[in-house]
Length: 95
Image 1 (tube, rainbow, N blue to C red):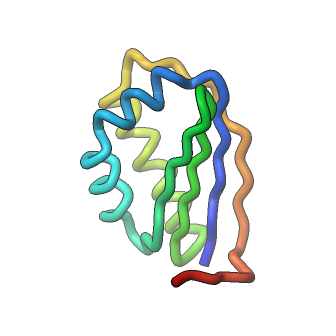
Image 2: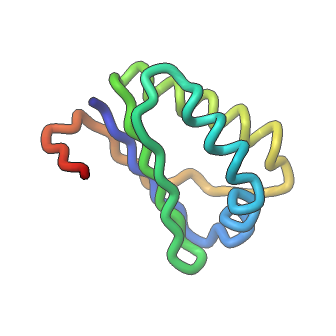
């Protein structure tokens, strides 16, 4: 498994738009190759996203698909590049 965590700050408008388009975001993410899980966590005007895929290549494809979707659907929302970390999942615990 491969995970990518992104942290955005000062993105109240992005959070609001994603909240309105939750169904579209769920579909976009879940239909990607190698999809395992996606989480969006908000804390005031800060946002963290966690994408988990089968492989690095699948995660990179998810990033490409998401960037295109944002360009096509959130044109009026300005977002500075996030702080990001990605890597192999080596411990996994879930219910």
